[in-house]
Amino acid sequence: MKQKIIVRVQMNCDKCRTKAMKIAAVEEGVISVAIEGAEKDRVVVIGDGVDSASLTCCLRKKLGYATLVSVEEVKEKPKPKPDPKTCCQSQQVFIASMGYADEPNCSIM
Image 1 (cartoon, rainbow, N blue to C red):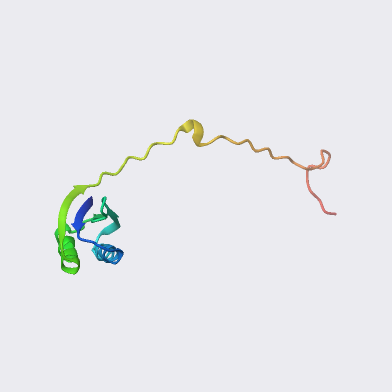
Image 2: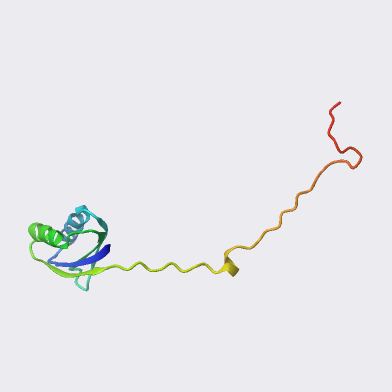
């Protein structure tokens, strides 16, 4: 089950943001990591089987203040079926035979 985890972390500089992303990316089951929010203070982790409490504890241990904001299931968007009209157009292939009408078989001598 894919889940989206949002953790609010105190990040004052780019170095702290990079450190937070590295810590989140190392966790088991993580697919993607991003920084969001108006103040860029939220780490968004999408993964399969990620332990949100463990992730928050690791961020808190390395960076200081960290709070788990939300954990929600990510639903896959169904892929739209391609329109059969625009998908493929049949192509006609013409094969021309080059030979003489009098000699149906090929002979070298």
